[in-house]
Structure formats: C-alpha cells, structure tokens
Length: 299
Image (cartoon, rainbow, N blue to C red; front, top):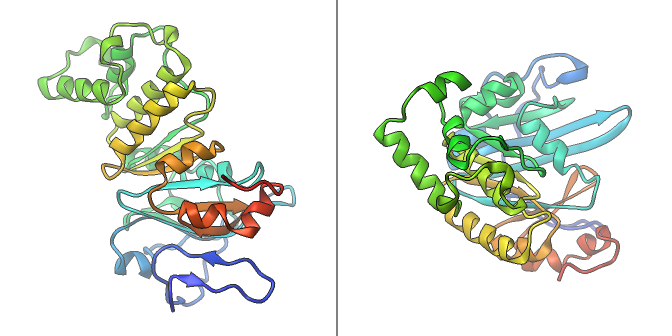
C-alpha cells in the first residue's frame, strides 16, 4: 500500500504521512477519557519499524458536550521535521496540541512520543520532562525579570525560583544561555526587563525559554500573530535555524509565513479531521482545501 490514499469517487484526496501502516489487531483497551479503560502499554508497530517517527497520533477522537472536536485523526511527525498545521477556526488545531501536552484526554485513539512515552498515560509534567515544549499564542514571560534571568529560570532541572537565583551558573550553563540569546536575536537585550520588549521579542524570548529545556518537540501556536513584517522575517530565520535540531509543529493562519517555512509536509485540518497533507504547492491548489477556506485560494 502506498503512502497516499487515492480519493474515492466524489471524495477529497488525503495524503497520509510516511508509509502506510499494517492494521494491528483491535485493542481491547482502546476506550479512553470519558469512556474509561486504559491506553496501550506498548508502542505501536509502526514506531518500532520506522524509528524516525517521533510523534504518533492515530485514530484520535474527542468530543465536548456532544461536539466532535477531533474526529478519527491520524498524524505522524518525524525527528527533525518542521510540520505546518493549518485549518479554519474550529478545525481542531488547538485541541490536538492540548492532547499532545496532556491537557485534554481523547475519547479514543493512541498517542505516543518516542517509543517510551505513552502520552495518554502521562500527566502534563511528565510530558514536559519527556521533551515536549509548547508556546501559546500569547507570550508568557516574567516581565519583571531581565531577558537573561528569564532564560536562567527556564534552565532544565529540578530548580525552584529562589534556588535558581541564589545559585551561580556553571560555565557550561552560561555558555548555553549565551548560545540561546544569540539564536533568538536577544543577545544585546540580555539585561533588559522582559516587560519592555516588543511583542515579537517576547515571542522569541518565550521560544528561547522553551529551548533552555532542550526539547525534542516544539509546539508553536500562531508564533507570528501580531508581529511586524521585520519580526516575521526574523522568526522565519529562527525556525529555519531550529529545523533539524528539533522537531517542530507550527499552527498558523498566516499563509505567507507558512509558505516561507514549509519545506516538507503541510497538514490541513477541517472539522476535526485531516483533510489533506502534502507540499504547500499541492495544498494551495487542493479543491477541498480551497472550499474549506470559504472559497478563497491559499495563494
């Protein structure tokens, strides 16, 4: 079976990521969340066969008060991949991020991060410690602290706030902070209070705080919303620099930005399901995608 599913008559074509997966036997413990039961104890076969798969979501469904926010969704993200996820409002983009980070439990499906972490059997803290970092649309930084102090506070490890500021950074830790400052273009602002930064600079600082945790997967929710054109250009450069060092999932409405960073697969969600996947050229010409965006072509 190929990695693409040919459309049936009258249906939209859906490109599936990677190679097709052999059907596994039904899981007697598939029911999750509000339906009770317990998640699988072993990683799926596809992750054992294809070791580059970092994030595995399969047949995920979740409903809120009768509304199906995510409907039988399957998504794989590889190590080092920058995956762009787009879709109209209400398509399920935020809910998927909530599921990945343990904030929302699905009604059914499987979700694994590497072969060691069953996301549906892990709490939010354990998921962060496993290597998943999430940046929300609105930047969340410690505005009364300096840029350097924000990064220092975000250093990975079991540190409390006061313990962090009483301790002196070791040579390697300080070098790492300096490396991140350069990467997020805030080296010249290290002593500046975070509250006085521009909106774009706060977004970069929050990304830098996530990078201090050395994550394997970054989830970025509308990272360029409210930015100036110059800040968007700098964010494009930042993500290109991070691509390959980390796996990145970007949810964004700015199609110009998506076109600038989408080197591999773009996933389009609609009504909680994957509507289409493929290159940006394929996506922006896909009839069903155009229809989902209220008849306006993505160009």
